Image 1 (cartoon, helix red, strand yellow):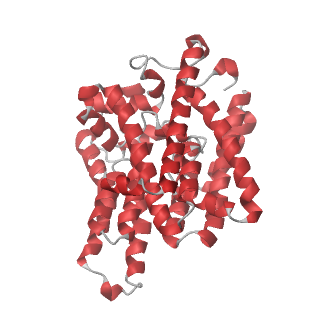
Image 2: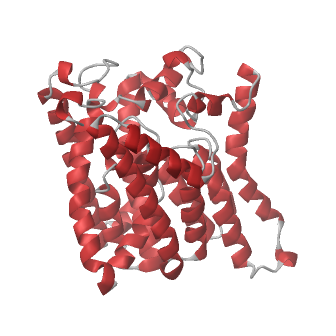
Length: 379
């Protein structure tokens, strides 16, 4: 709270928080409007919880609630809920005295605020005046509604930014702990080890003789995911049972060109226009991330580039690009890069146009999400 109080004296921070609040109000109001105005028979939404929380509990929200309420099991959705990492549902369980659905909703929204604070703080200290625009592009990204629904995105982004923040301060214990919890939140958390290790080595000028015992604290980052794998082994006999859950949904190791080939085949074989649009949207996001990786070398520090590149590669090796637009939201260096590009006259107009398009997509995709598709509306 002292940190927030100090930041509040910063006009840029106040404006960033106002933008965050406006974006949050936009998503929640559009979500409720889309949910209550669209007849149930025109949507594919599920009745999971009470009417006020139900719009925010669709898709993976069901899995997180199931883990919190019933633990890991093979009954969920016919394939089990082992693919969803444990920290977010554990927090839901802890605060379930408020109701599981209410706890999940509040946690997501509280951590979205903390993620914005941490993102503003790290950008302000490193880049100065682009911090507010970084927050703007972040909270108005087409899939930023995931910061409000019962998903682990908010928690993960907060932890991943915190990991970088404390590593830059040389506080390896705090960085390691934040990274540990990040890799207990999403598989992507494992990737934090590489840029954090780079930051450590860069601080000692890559003089390996100066490596100290505190370097071992960086190993806390992969330890989170390892602990979850060990836990799965003890309860199922298979440490990688989670990957099999997603394999049943078409996620499996494949070379990037094979992934794009699969998307191309799916695009031309899809008979429904909305399926073609969805595939095209995911492909554009993937190509945009690749382009960002190429451009980032000129604008961002190497540790950010490492995280951006490795985070981009992970879904490209997954066999298909489904949900890559949601995944892109968690790659926070992307939102630092965009306002830096905006400063370049070559990209300034393009970035502003993309922001307008992003807001329109955010509204449309929010309505789509709370209804789990809108077949009768072509969404």
